[in-house]
Image (cartoon, rainbow, N blue to C red):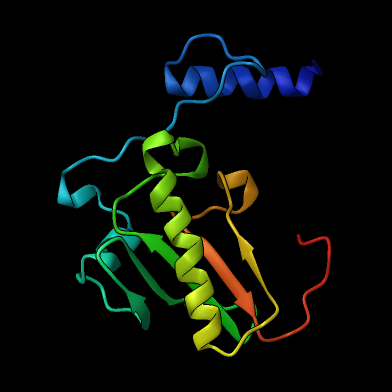
Length: 148
């Protein structure tokens, strides 16, 4: 392991109070809390506390337009039940996560999209800025590969 990476791990360990870290030991995952003051922006949108341009909603998910779109269609599909990030998904979440993809397809159909991209970012280093699992539905223009 390079000295620079070891220094980063040491700073994380020191700042978090977590024991020694290695590539094999994952960073702690934030857990959702019941206190309303700790709700994510997406939970507040799902609960109707913050306005959004909602394009779909049901009892398990809500889909709304991204406020900083990267394409003509850029919709976020969010579970109503908060899950902080993709690596916090457990076996009990399989049906819910599958439902998010079904909602994305429905929204894509409603938007008239036959070609589109679905993106899930996991962690700040991957571009996740709101720690509430969400699927980006991006389309309406040609998308290049690789992303990022």
